[in-house]
Length: 144
Ligand SMILES: [Cu+2]
Image (cartoon, rainbow, N blue to C red; front, side, top):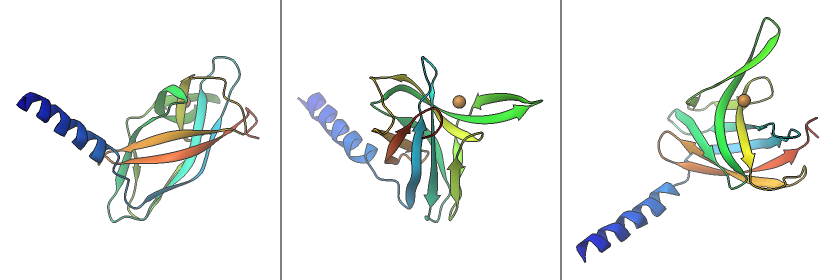
């Protein structure tokens, strides 16, 4: 049945190209701060782009969390705030830093009992369709 073959081919294409590694991108110092109760966790890392083109981080997925958003923290009149951002650029030859009081991943809906010291895989998604799997170390609320 032609329709069946088409579906199989489309699936193969998705599997193939969805898994394309992000060229020239590497991650370091990836960790997640776990907070007590129902509070969302925050993820931090540095993304280094040794490629010739600027790349934008557009999202993330993890089996450890139901939802992951890109956020930016700021302080206005002494009050800590944060807002969702759609994308974060990593310039060619540059580094994007996600750190406390700055940009971060906001991770909510943990899928199980996550403990400091464990690691959770997170797949970062970029504007060019590539992905980068990164292992994040879980830390407690104090960052240890
Ligand atoms: Cu946030």
